[in-house]
Image 1 (cartoon, rainbow, N blue to C red):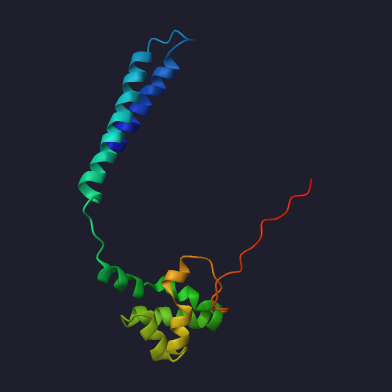
Image 2 (tube, one colour; image 1 turned 30 degrees about the vertical axis):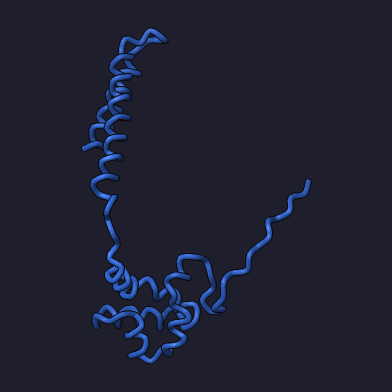
Length: 147
């Protein structure tokens, strides 16, 4: 509702700006009223969102872990090592049989458990790294500038 009102206020400000001449725009009061209302309702909306929706919210760690474990996106870590076709088969098998990727990979015997655990580490996957090397990326020095 806030977004709709702000968009409507923007339309009114646009019409007001287009309807005036030079610096003697008779629509300035309408424009100022709509801009200040938009600022006020967005500010109040952010405050209420924080107070009534964010504060006191606690993550359900067990459910989050379950979602991460069942995420098919994790299969991307396997592709550089076992190939796209095998990784795709694992993902499809997991979906078709309601399994985690790890369970599907182990059932299909395409990778052993230790190698799967080494490659598929969601906490490492949120940062750049190369799966096949199994190590963190080499930090690059800033390129030197020539004058």
